[in-house]
Length: 165
Image (cartoon, rainbow, N blue to C red; front, side, top):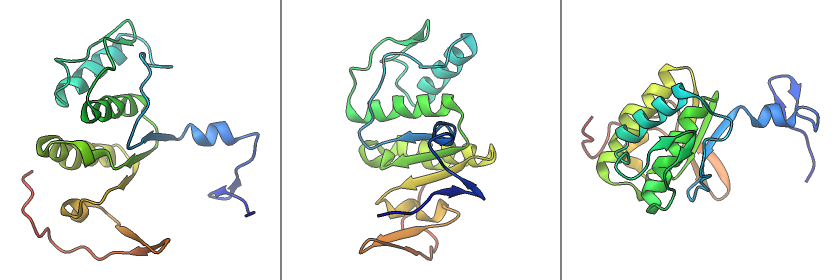
């Protein structure tokens, strides 16, 4: 395969690849967690981190002190919530979430889809959410369905299941 990648009219090359990569905050379905906030230091980051830990209800398991997490020994759902905290703190222009809600309880799914994603949108962030959970498709500005290796637009009606917000 060959080709080129452009962002707007700018060609992505070896020379500018790192700056392009730095535009993205990504939370994979099985995130790797560092024991510290890399490149994020200072009391304002710790306060924000602890606020998000509380919102996602893992503040009883994890705290941030001196830029370090007290633990990363967490369940899969808790690990994803901690990765979400880190992504939020990175404050990048583009967020990609790969099956973030798959291992979450209904309350955390609600917070993710009904509070956190609208907050990112209000802050002018571009957000891509990869999910099989069609109960939340109606919240997307644009929905694409991958079928046979191709993306196609998907018309979204009102939710079939009432989602409490």
